[in-house]
Image (cartoon, rainbow, N blue to C red; front, side):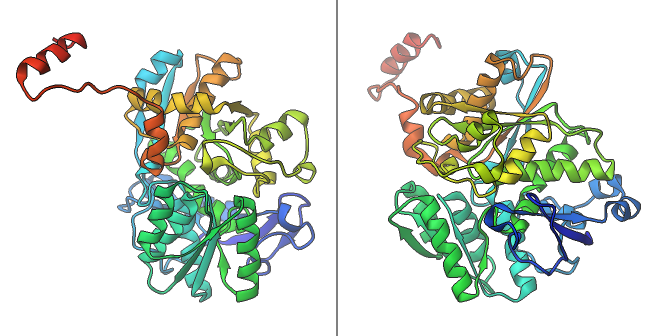
Length: 418
């Protein structure tokens, strides 16, 4: 177990003991999200990078020594993490980059990176002896909690999700057997309802940003990118951003590795937002603090990154500013076009929010934010089967043929295949 040195507020530098605060900073409220910080000097003397790389655990628990969990902690049995990191030479060639790799987190058990956070939060709930865990979500975090909860019979799961979420995502929740409350309102309204209910019922909240253990789960994607790259950080990591928790997790993972001396620098983080949900990008461009950000109405096809008031806004801004990174925005049309283009160049089928990272990388190249001599990792945060309707909308074609070889030959000749 990594010994927790303190919980530290991102806003005011307030410091607390490991069990003193459950969620956000009492002095700074919800915007005062907390970092879980460790005795890094002690960890450097205790841990051996090569020994960790020899771990037989082909999942996120290979990094349990860098997590705030006891070695004997009970964890969900589904295998989360250690997802593929693919070389993507066709993307590199098309975009004129030195190298590109794709971290395919759609390969997690419920199809998204959010499984990482849910796994750690459930383990923490078991440590605390809390039997009900709840979250608000546009779909992926809810699916992650429902699926991992289904594998953990000691815990009941209650989900608050906007009724407008994609049908495939809602179906996934119901299949897993969670108690699902379809909120006739926005994600942010569902979030507030969830927080209020958890407080009233004594449930454990998995909500993004509010619970610092979510960051510690999501940071494992950065640990894997580094290890799978022979402990070399790429120049740039591109990832889509909604609530800000995933980019915050990436920052925390690379930060921890830098403190341990296992990597020699932080990669620049490229946060990609939809034009119709760009609260953080606007705040970055205007030089605003997290406290100055106001709630805005949103509208985008990329439901997984639709957020009127990003809950992990303080950490997200720090992640980009602290790595000399940038935010970019992309249109829904660009996101839609990115789904098949990204798939055909990499073999990875991404939902709209995940494909936004590829669209954002193209935008960053056009704007001179990323240069051709750099190495880039694209984090694909969710599987394309999460939103098949948008995938269908992104493509056309298919050739009908009569059931005989002559008709097949005509079609293939027309396509230039024979």
